[in-house]
Image (cartoon, rainbow, N blue to C red; front, side):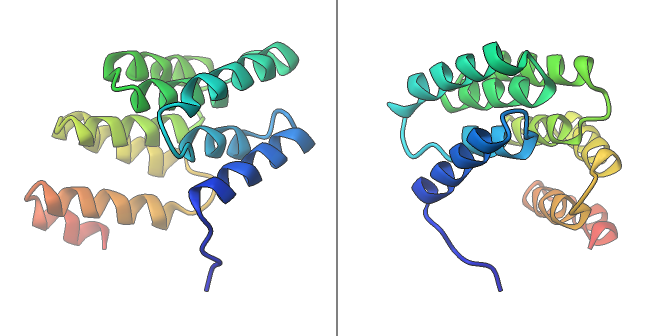
Length: 151
C-alpha cells in the first residue's frame, strides 16, 4: 500500500527531485502537476524557466509548461505545448498521456482515445495505470464495450 501525501508534499518532493537531477523528467512533470493553487503558477513558471536555462528545452519541460497552461484554462496553448513535446521526442509517453487528459476534459472522444492509445504504446512503466484511466474515461463517456476490453 502506498503512502498518501498532500499535494504540497508531492510538490516539495518533485522540487527536491529536480534539485538533485535537473533533467529528471518524472520530477519535472510532477512539479507541474502538484500545484495547490492558481497563485503558484507564476512561481512554477519562473522555476521552470530557470530549469530550462540550466538544462535546455526538453519534452518534459514542454509537458510541464503545458500543464501550467491547462491549469490557467488555456487548453489550446496546453495542446500546443504537448504537441511540441511530441515533435521533440515522439517516444515520450507522458506527452501523449497529457494530451489524452486534455482531450478527455474537452470531450473529444476520438482524439482522447488516440492519445490514450499512444500513451500506452509509448509508456515505459505502469501501462496499467494509463489503461485504468483510459477505461474510466471510456465508461464516463458511455463506451462500455471498449472499456471492458481494457479492463
